[in-house]
Image (tube, one colour):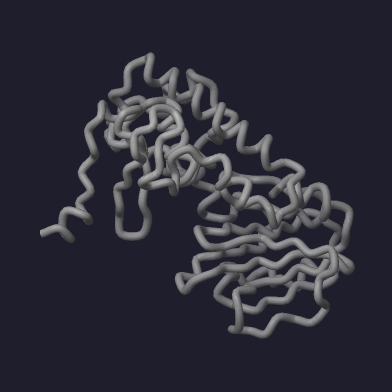
Length: 274
């Protein structure tokens, strides 16, 4: 998505920003109107944050779980109606532009207008980026950690850029249990984890580059082996993909490939069965 913005937004001028949901803005000064008239000079990623550099002033956004960036080559000049529909913020770039949208009711989509990306608290706390981490760096990140490896992979302060979906895919490719203790993985397991992390993420980027923004979610889903495939056969061994549910999310894994054939405890399911 950052590449899509580099290809389509850089060099254009921010004509206007419409804010349809004031709750999306997490900063008040400088106001979003300070972006008006500024040229877009770059678009980059910081972990799971998108950063649109507008000549030294930055529009940073985090899409959360249900948010999305919808690009349009013929953006409507009519401002979206506040409080109606999924559109939270609209950026006009001379006839083209994009909407930040969010489905559902949680409303965790967030945007900041800052002089430097590090002024966004979540960016300031980011750990090393997963795509740029070598084996020695990953070994250092894991050293002494007592949480489950699934938890560490999605902890942005430990390792930036991996979400729930790709952590499932990485652990499946590495043949590791999501419940394994991060700091107790042996050298061979850490090497497998690093290799699968680079393979899965680089493949995901390669498949997504040059895709239209509207197709990115479908492209992401098409490459999944276990995530969101509960009950379907594992493409490696044929065993049924299993799920562990939590309060606001779930994870998927293959028992044969990852846990020696043993299903992991699903506390929410256990409570329902009782």
